[in-house]
Length: 199
Ligand code: MN3
Image (cartoon, rainbow, N blue to C red):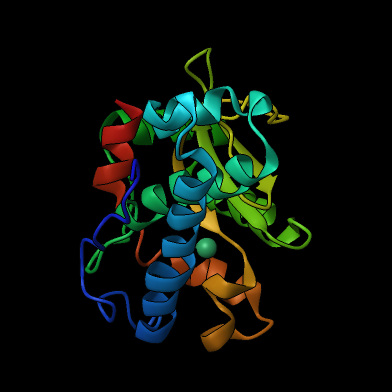
C-alpha cells in the first residue's frame, strides 16, 4: 500500500473547546482513513502508485475522478492536521507576518477575507492561504477535495494554510453555524507550521 494514514500529532481532545474530540476522532479515523484506503484502491497495480501525493495533485487532470477526490482528500487532511495545534492561535510572526501585511493590509483583514472565502464556499470544500508562483500570498477556495496544487484549480499555488468546511468537519459541535467554526479555527492555527511552509 502506497499511502498510510498519518498519526494525529496531538490527542483527539487537544483542540477543545474549539474543535471537539468526537469530531476529530471521526474526521481523522473515519473520513481521512477512507480517503487513504480509496486512494490506494484506485492506484494499486498502476504505474502511478509510486508517485508522491504532491506529484499526483500537480497532474490531477491525467487521473480518474476517484484519484482526484481521494488523493485530494489525503493531501488536504494531512496538511490540515499539521497546521492546527493545542495552545496555538495568536498571530503570525516574522517573514510570514510581513507577507500577510503586504498582501492583505493586516492580520485582521486577512482573517476576515479568509473567513469570507470559507463561509461563502457553497457546499463542501476548503479555504486556502496560498503562495503563488510569483511568491505572493493569496486567498482562494476549492470545491470538494480539490486543492490549489491541482492543475485544474482556478487559482494555483502552494497551500500554506487550509480550512476544511465540509459539514463533517464541524457539524457535531456547530451544526449549521459554519461561521462560528471558521472564527474558532483561529484559536488553533499553528502559525509556526504555516511559517515553515512559507519559508
Ligand atoms: Mn474533512
